[in-house]
Structures are given as C-alpha cells and as structure tokens.
Amino acid sequence: MRLVIGRFMAAAALAALSFSPTLHAQEFKFFDRTVQVHGFGSQGYVKTDGNNWLTMNTSDDGSFHMTDVGLNLSSPLIDKLRAGAQVYDHNLGQLGQWHPSLDWAFLDFRAKQWLGFRGGKVKTTVGLFTDTQDLDFLRTFALLPQSVYPIDMRDANIAHSGGDVYGRVPLAQRMGKLDYTVWSGHRNDSMHGGYAYFLQYHGTVENSYGGLQYGGDVRWETPVKGLLLGISRLDEDLIGIGTRAGLPNVEKTKKDFTNQFFGQYIHKNLEIDSEFKRQYRDHILRNGTAEDQGNLHAWYVAGSYRLFKRVSAGSYYSHYTATSTFNKILDTDLPDGHVYDKAITGRVDINRFWNVKVEGHFMDGYALASFPEGFYPQQNQTFASTTNGLVMKTGFNF
Image 1 (tube, rainbow, N blue to C red):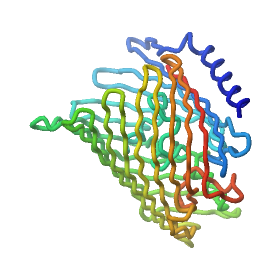
Image 2: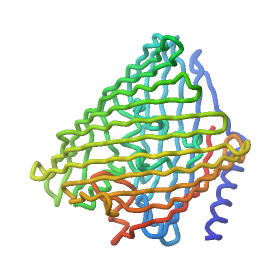
Image 3: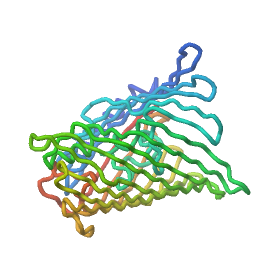
Image 4: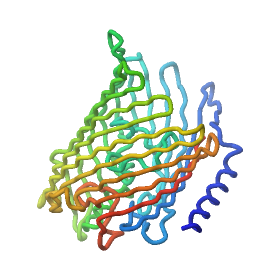
C-alpha cells in the first residue's frame, strides 16, 4: 500500500508540474464575441476489501482505472442569448472505456429574471447536484453519496436532449426567492454505462436505451441566510432494444418516476446537505414475457468544513435500499437489498487549480436489485456482506 500511495502522489505531482504554469481559463475572439474555454481532469485510485467495486478489480492491489477529462466552451451570442458545450471522456473500470461523448450543448435565452429558455442537450436539474456532477473541483468529496448520485449512472442522469423553461421569482414580504425549472426531452444512455453493463450479466446486450423524460424542480431560497429547500419530480417512458441469447429483445417501462426532496445550509466555512430520493419502476422485460417492479429508497446527510484556506474535511452517511420482484429481492434488511455507506474525506488544495482528496468508505451490503449501485456480479463471484474502501483522487481545473 505504501508503494501504491507513493506512485499515486508521484504521478499527481508530475501532472501538476506539467499543467500548473498554464492552468487558467482561456479566452479568444470569434468575430466580435468572447469565447471562454474551461477544462478539468482527474485521476483516482480505489482499493477495497470484501467486494470489488464500481466495475473495477479493487480488492487485490486496487485499481487506477478511474480517470476523466472534460473541455467546455461558452460564449454570449447576442444580448440575453448564450451558447455552451462540453466534450467529456472517461474510464471507470469496465465503464466509459474511452468513448468520448458530448456531455451537454445548449442555447440559453434569458428573456426576464423570471423567464428563460434552454434548448439542446441540457443539464437535468434534479436535486442538489445532478446538473453539477461534472464540477468535482467544487466539492470536498471524492465521490458524491452513491445512494442518490451513483457514478456508474452519470451518463444517463446528467443531461437530456430537449428544452427547459426556468426562472427566479422574488417572493413578497421578504420571504426569499423561488427558482423553478420545467423540462422535457429524451434520455439516451451510453452503451458503455452502468445499466447496459448491469444487463450483460443477465444475458441482455442493449443496442439502445432511452426515451421520453419530463419533470420539474422548485427550490426555495429561504429568508434564513444560507438555507435552501427544494423538491424535484422526474417521469420517464423508456425503451431498450437489443438481443438476448442471440435473439431480438425489447424492454420498456410501464411506469417510471422519481421524487427527490433536498435541503442545503451554508454558513461561512460550513456546508450541510441532505436529500431523500424515491424511485419506482414497473418494467416489461424479455419481449413482454416478464415484468419487474422495482422500488428504490435512498437518503443521505453530508457535512463539510473548510478547516484552513486550503484544507477541508467532510463526512456523510448514505442509505440505499432497493427491491426487485424479478430478481426476487424483497427484504431490504438482507445484504443484497441495501448499501449503507459511511464516508470520511480530507481535501487539500495544492494551488488554485490542483487538489488531492483522500476518502474512506465503510459499506454494509451490496444491493443487487434492478438499479446499478456499484457492486456487479461480473467482478464478484461471491459477495461479502461488508466492504471497506479507500479512494484517492487528484484533479485539476482551469
């Protein structure tokens, strides 16, 4: 382990020395418009006992197969109209596999403070962090609470192809402000993402998976300084087309919805976040010959504190339970019906552009219902009931 840590820090230091002299936002002129260029990248190392995690072989010597990079451009086109786009690539164990994607690309017209329109491939506003999953450098944690923000489902959750209506409405009598977003569009999963990989164990190979997605988000900036409360709703009508045992296979949802309730409190160097998520999915499988009803309940409480100018610490408790009638997982007290995760993190900002995070995870359960949650049978012939994990991650941004 000492050798691994030494190699990790040496690689991180070399990367920082390579990038630091030029790590600042770039700008250039296109006709008379200013175009801003930003980017980020991270490299992680994950070591566990008990079970392999996140499609990586982490329980032996650990794995360095946790890398991502992104580059984005944005520019005001005319008054009240701006455009932006981001290209993203990553490798997470068996996921991503260095297949670049267009993370998001949009036009945004802000007619009034209370009324704006976005169109294109637009970030999905659900809960506190769905639309900011690509801004890892803003957070203390190496991994967001996986009960609500599973990293293996990032590609499916971060954006939709469609349109948003949004705005901010001041409330009377100093009651704060309301931010709202209403959206509709199309979800299109990568075939290198967590759900497609999860299905492979069951003999299904997806060629496409996605469909209609619509919902809304309302968040209240309360009169209490630093306190935010909100609620999100997401409905989906999805279809998967592929093969099973070499024959054509179709699966589709009868009903699929998610409710999410969240709160955040920020005061000086302290941040406290909490969310509750409930997802229900009634899914028709195997060309209509089987059906799965899945129930997911998840919540977390997280806190972080900036101890010094460049040093932060944080911890969270993440609680996840899921049932599946098809997989016959009905008792969430058993290890295959839950993941309870206690995490503790330390972050050091080496400079404005480079950070290093060290995070410990202490997990109970491995959850093998209808929703991917980090533990996959492909990497685990048998499962241990508990898993302890170490995540070390270094990242840069400009």
